[in-house]
Length: 101
Figure 1 (cartoon, rainbow, N blue to C red):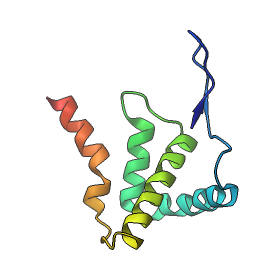
Figure 2: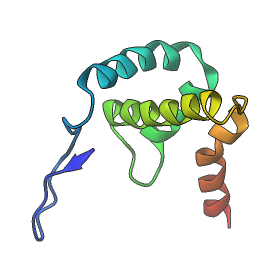
Figure 3: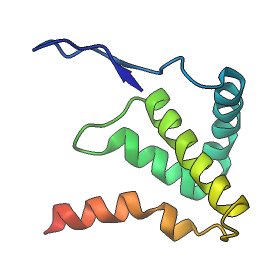
């Protein structure tokens, strides 16, 4: 995400055009059905778009989840770690605990 801002002006955040274009497009295409059919990714997407402080737009949420998916694939392939749904859901749990305190 790239923000177009200068001084006091806060511009809109947009998806940057840096990086591998085909990989970015592939991740985006993979994420749509993943959000639709996977409970954990759907819950994270709903959380990011409806959270009380700084909610994201739907496309911004999908881009954030694409980055999260890359980190999961890296951990599974390189670090030989099994996919842990609870570890992925820490974003929701940590923020709700902070608000409760």
